Image 1 (spheres, rainbow, N blue to C red):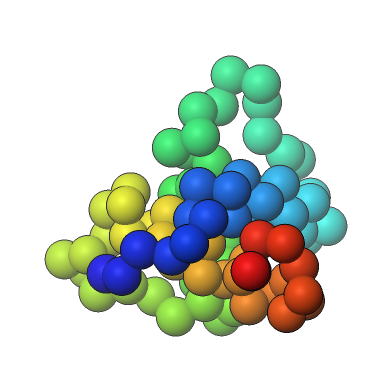
Image 2: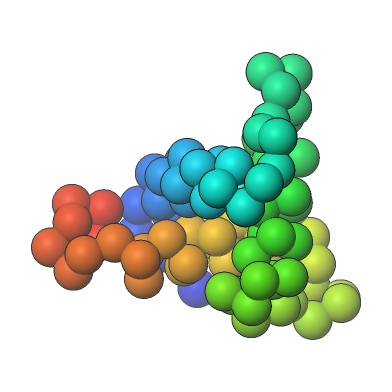
Length: 86
């Protein structure tokens, strides 16, 4: 797994956009007490279920790989000239 430039910032943006996407899909939203770890897993599974991201191999389904996958997803959704893609 190759590290992406600005991966932490991309992950934050992915969680923000993913929460909005989940609400539009009918999910009630995340509680203030939900950890980032729970949000990452829930958003990853939602995006896989909707076939917006390729699922990870079963052996690779862990937090670092899910975070990386979300960062890749959002980097492809952002315009090429977005500051996080520079």
